Image 1 (cartoon, rainbow, N blue to C red):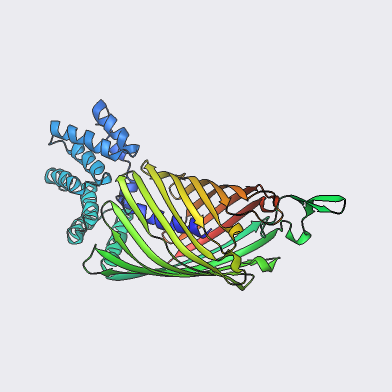
Image 2 (cartoon, one colour):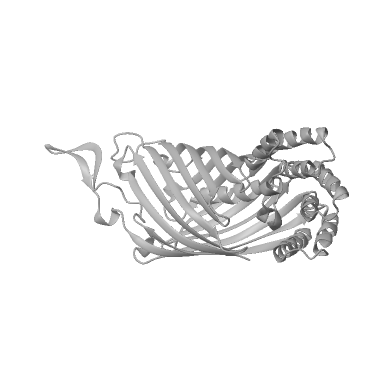
Length: 458
């Protein structure tokens, strides 16, 4: 669970750094109707189709060709500017917008776009000039509020350091909170007792799957500071705490406490994070493990709508009361993320190689993991998401009573719906199914977890 949450935290925010940020005014504008007169032109319509589908480099190239054929056309210049901005060609976009404004100085949409491009180019003083010119024209209240939010965000970004605080609260139902085996009888390597052979054992009733309702809360804070000149390296850190509470089987309540410090570097096409982490895990309010590790990640924008994540982990897991599990764990994975459409819907395909060491070899294993995930904007503030994940693990040594070396195949299906209530507050409903098949029945289990939660960021 920890590695999955880490992947989400590192990949999604970092990936967004490569996406041109649309202002509230842009999102509310009906671009298609704005270009309705031009859409009768087959070449323009084809380029606009690429733009709406999220194929921004192709759209930029097509609009560039139309611009060369008719460089004074205001709408071609505006469309070219939109596509160039989305494709990451900010200077091209700015020049096209300046051409529009030289002909139509009162074109507020073009001026807003130019301000947005200046922000992306880290030319905040020029952006403020453009925002001020728009505000001087008494724009609609929604546009005014959007500009004020952008100005506030620029001030925060210009500070040498800033921090955030996040609170999560949720409730859940878990039908196998103790990860009990699916079958009441476990097949074992035959044991002879006198004239009898024993090839099955009954599972202790307390070890069978236990059902529980629960609640959880988590609080985390993160901060970062510029190191040297702006846009170079940043130092960052975070602190977090998580605790679950169950209506029954309190011995399976979980607590996670973690801290990290690290460095990150963000460029036009990449984001590099390198944290050092310390985690303390409790089960039933008793110490379970201490984890020391690092998890460097690199997100690289192959194209405006295609990102590649490389994520590695190396950590030492020190189990407090059961040292047989103690050992090093390492993994290396690649995830390719494709984004499309104006809402930046996404599909991600990933693979990971895992090695878990342990003092007792029957717990040490090699693993291979594959995943497919997607996020789709259903309405303006509502998104659907899903995950398919499979993992194969081959253990170094057979467990006691097992006829063969342990071999596990695990599948996970997860889905949910998330709704943003405002800039700070979000609600979420999710379901997660896990099926672990093992050639040793003791480790074969199923688990269904339903969760409803809310989060607030300060």
